[in-house]
Length: 174
Image (cartoon, rainbow, N blue to C red; front, side, top):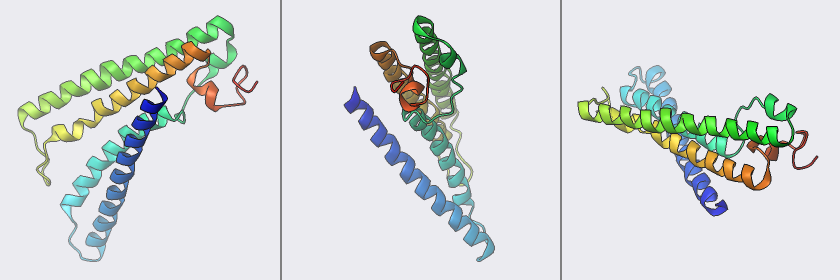
């Protein structure tokens, strides 16, 4: 599992880095062409918007996998024993359910409907389904990571935030 997680981490990180670098280049060119050349580029404006969508969604999945996401861990911190295990399991399952139903199923449905209608972007003439496919891809990443979190919880009894936060009462260093 650790090798698979490392592979997913590496792939997501590479995609995010490349997309972010291109996004920054698009924004710099957009500013330069608008204020120096006096003719703003519509292509880079649209490309930056679409890359931002991909970076945000894939970045969210990657951040979750690194256990650096925003977490309100009040309930796991005030519970102990079996109840703490159940609370952590419920949180992980809720995130997994959201990723599966809303992001993967709903996102795939959106991509499918958009591709069927033939909707394309105005400047790039890119099928909008290619932009929207970021939703189910990010959902798959989140589902993968939550699966790993659930396995870790079953194996070690520790929730995802307990491993990255040594100050957590009852965590691995307490």
